[in-house]
Image 1: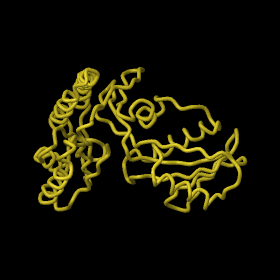
Image 2: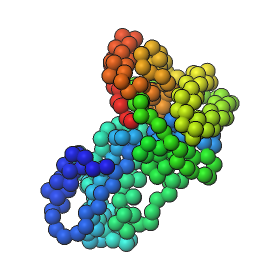
Image 3: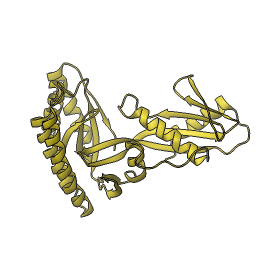
Amino acid sequence: MYTERSVELKSDFYSRYGTSSGTLCFERVGLPFSLMKGRMSVLGFSAGCGIRAYGRRCGDVIRILNADSNVCDVRFGSSGGAQIIYNSDIMGFGREKETISYTIDKLMARMRLREGVTPYDSLAALCDLYGSGGWCAYFHGDIAESVPLPLYDHNLAIVRVRKNSGRHADAGSVNCFEDGEDRRISAAVAGLKDCRPEILFNMMNESECAMEKLLPISGEARVALAAAHGADGVIAARMCGSGVMCVIEKDKTDSAIHAIREMFGREAGYYAGVVVIK
């Protein structure tokens, strides 16, 4: 996805590495998010925010530079070297490092410095290959496929909280939740294939109810969930690794985010960051 930021990154590449001959390659990978995850199944997607990277083959040393710093990661490649620069739209999400690593591997494969990646390498790979551009990735056992994700009238947003889990859950509760999650994912996938996204929304809400009963959730996360469910326009909300994921009606997104921030701030004592990711 070429954007103004991509053009800026390209200019930054040339200012740091020079404009000597060589084909410049580009890759963009969205940060991966799980809509739901069970014992055997994962339903995820590639977000609109993510990692952008430019690279070109050069010499026998691989130099990888973060555009937001002057720190260069130097590696020796068995099949050749490269100059690579990358940046991130959003910092601090749990899978950012995984996504950076996958983006660089994908860029190196494009430059024919390594073999291609597979969806089994990471969630970033799974979502990039099967869950971008209006689709979500469904992984069950050893089978991966793309499933429609028709969110034309909705946005997905993350309410960032400082702490979203409590004590460790016992194994029996985790197993019970994951078994139920596999069933809910199966129902959500069937609904998406029939162009009925409301089934996904219902399964996300059911997933959250099961999570609150079976798994330890911090007080801050409970406040964020209550704020999300109390905001007009939010039709589904559940815990995720970065906080609380909300499905919001598109024309009510701004007002819903404002309401969530206000309600959360009054109860938790600080304003949570709310980021629209899709």
